[in-house]
Structures are given as C-alpha cells and as structure tokens.
Length: 184
Image 1 (cartoon, rainbow, N blue to C red):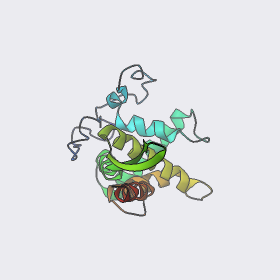
Image 2: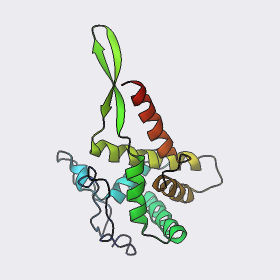
Image 3: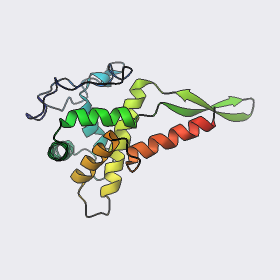
Image 4: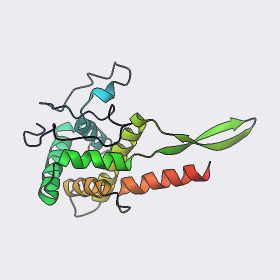
C-alpha cells in the first residue's frame, strides 16, 4: 500500500524497457535517506514516488523540505484519485512512460567542428528526465500563481498521462525529440 490508500500490486508498467527502472514496491516510509547512493545505479531500487518527491525538492523554495514535498505528493495523489477514479500510482507510471524522451542530441567533435548527433536515451535516463520535467512543470505552474503546487502537480501528472501537449513534460519531450530528429 502506498500512503495507506493505494494498492501497488495492481500497477503495471506497459513499456518493456522501463520495467526494470520503475520501482513500485510497497514502502512504509518514503524516506530512504541516501541508502542507495553508494550503489551503482542504486536509484532504480528507490520507489518511484520517493524519486518524484526528491525531484520536487530541487527548487529554492522546496530545497530540503522533504515532509512538505511528501504532503504535496500525497495530496496530489488524492486529487488524482478523486478526479480520475483510478489508482494514482498507475496514472503516474503512465505519465512517466509518456513524458520520457526516446532520443536526444549529443555533440560530437570532428577536428575543430562540433556536430550534433541524435542518440537513443537509456531507460534510466528516460525515467529521470520524465520525473524532473513533471516536477519542474508543477513548480513553474504554481510560481506567482493563485493555483497551489498540489493542484499543479496533480494536473501535470494527469496531463502527462493523457499525453496532452499542454503538459510541460510532454512539450519538453516533444521539443527534445524534434531537435534530435533534425540532427539525424
């Protein structure tokens, strides 16, 4: 159970590449305290909701305020459950699958010339990018707005799950993929 409300056993990841990198194990406490930081790719052992909470703490206003980010996420999940009548964890997984870019651009140097080259994105990076863009979209939408960050996070997750272009995460993904397509 997640937040003592939502069943994690009914959640499934549809993208076969991301199955290994999205951890939805039941966690009593979503605060590992850097327990996995010493392992290579240890973040894949962290619950995906805790990773979202950690991504919410990236801005100046929320830096180090884990309990505030925890409450924001919990309340956003309640809003998602009320609006969609579905498991909000499944909605989050769908949002991550939709918001993760599949290819991006890197710069290769040939002699003195830098040439952009399109490359595939690893599934771990796709999950990281998706979570970062969802959290960034929510904080940007709530900045200097009457709308609270709880509502903004819930809206961002629901829009990303629907693959709606008005979502910050989806628009960012499409921008990255468009640039990568032009660099092929």
